[in-house]
Image 1 (cartoon, one colour):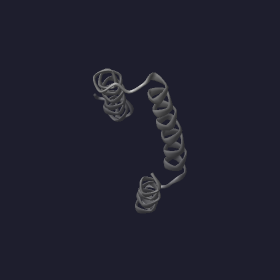
Image 2: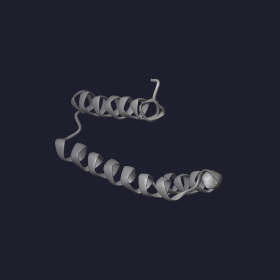
Image 3: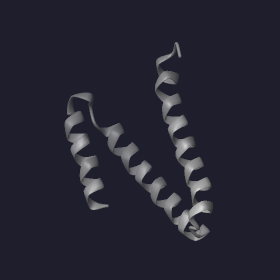
Image 4: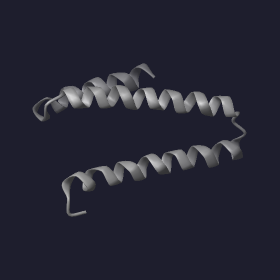
Length: 77
């Protein structure tokens, strides 16, 4: 946790792992089909890619605009 890069990336990796574990465990209990789970994983991957591209193009001073763009994607969903 001394390095800034690992300090920022570890919580994200933990969040992604927890989300995947929840999906895998939860789909068995709820009875969601494997194809629906695959579709969900693909949609999540596409959303992560779009968010990463948008976030890499925005300067820190334009962060409110980035938040507005990402919220508009939530509205579309």
